[in-house]
Picture 1 (cartoon, rainbow, N blue to C red):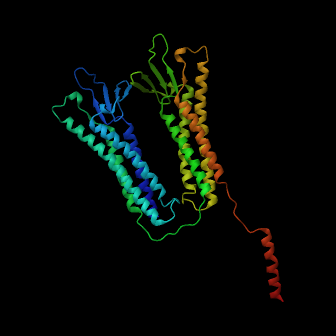
Picture 2: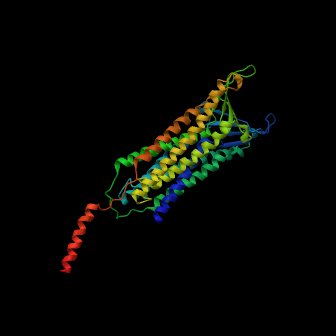
Picture 3: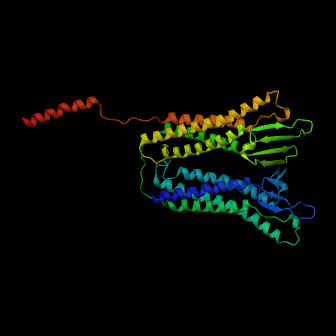
Length: 412
């Protein structure tokens, strides 16, 4: 039990570290500076990341621009971009290997082979942590050297951003998780194959959970993307080279130059009724999707968390129902928003400036809900409840005369 607990702790730390690396890769806050100078407004802050640079104003508006070329970055950020991407790939490979070799899974039956796989997974996760630690420390060293360099102009000096602190934490979690996996499962000689396998139902369960998790990922995407309602600015006083995006959490204006201004909604009541409901329904869908995945882990055929096959069947059936409910909440939110957009578009009373078109998030939402429903339906049908096998009535009747004859014989 202690070995299983250490494995779970190692996998959890590694998973949190890998999520931190994703945040480090996406967040444009590697270098942060307040604009200080004679000709620069002090109410602005510049963020520099490995993919884009952003300017945040005191009003809350943000202008972001993706780098036109990789050569436009400094050499430390060029190296950081490559190393962080490799760290993410290596990290997900280590997590998959640790899942295959875990004590609570049945992918490998021999205990000694499981131990070797876990040690390999721990080593891979440690390599992922080192790959994340190198670019973060490299960039921090460059920032500190430039900050104390008197030859560097004050307006060009930068400070350490939040992404660097998150990167140090993520690298630490990956290294600790990998270390626990390397030490929690020493090679053992005992252990024999169970000899029982269910290839076809396990394959269907893997297909169902894969479709469901793809649907959950799509739901996360539509929750974050501000592209529910999209329109080209067409009007007398509006520039036609701009596109307006509306999402669940913010509105953005994208210009033809690649710059983008985003602003979070000041209050929930600023949203239209369909987007207000969509925000709540999408959040509920995400909660249900994560809950369905956790329940599936308990009852899946590839895990040993539960031993009774009939209980496992009921647990998998429950996870399938939860995934279907998650699909229902997603389709309701997306269909409601789409219906409102189409109705307003064909309404002659709505000015052309206020008319919107279907954004990419709507289409992604339809696909995500379909994947969730298909995955949940497969989980509901792959593992039906099995009846316990009891002796037949004919067998009982066959034993009854034997008992009576034996009793009569003793009596005689």
